[in-house]
Image 1: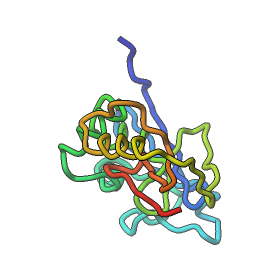
Image 2: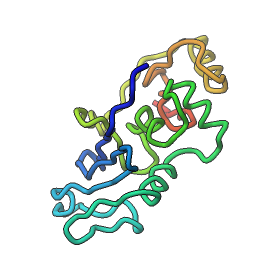
Image 3: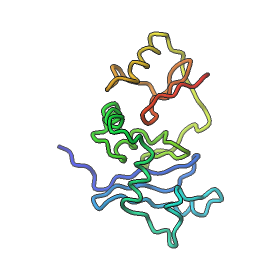
Image 4: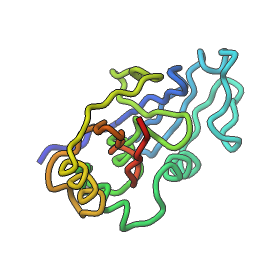
Length: 171
């Protein structure tokens, strides 16, 4: 069985600008702001509970865990369904947000280190038949999808990546 890397990291982006990073390591979780974000005219703390600090010291432990945990549904059944649907292996916030962090509640995105946000201001899609729409709606309430879910689809756009829900957007 493969062992998890000692440290896992997601970069935090806000409106296409790199903000900082969130790491999970054996000794716990930490969040650190990038110096460029602190100096940016748009720079602001992600939370009032995690203001910029002298020397840009990282935040650690429960404060960090709670911030990211609050980006996800509170309901354990929904978290289990998300974990199963996205094959995350657990319902903890880090594992779920690796899969769902591209489209978090609010203005932030959580992306792997080597990935940057794409097309922040555009939406694309393809028309769906009635049977394809029906299948997507069945998948929305199923424990696990009966077939792969596309990222964006439909003459009405359905964003299937949202944490715990599908969003239908008029074209």
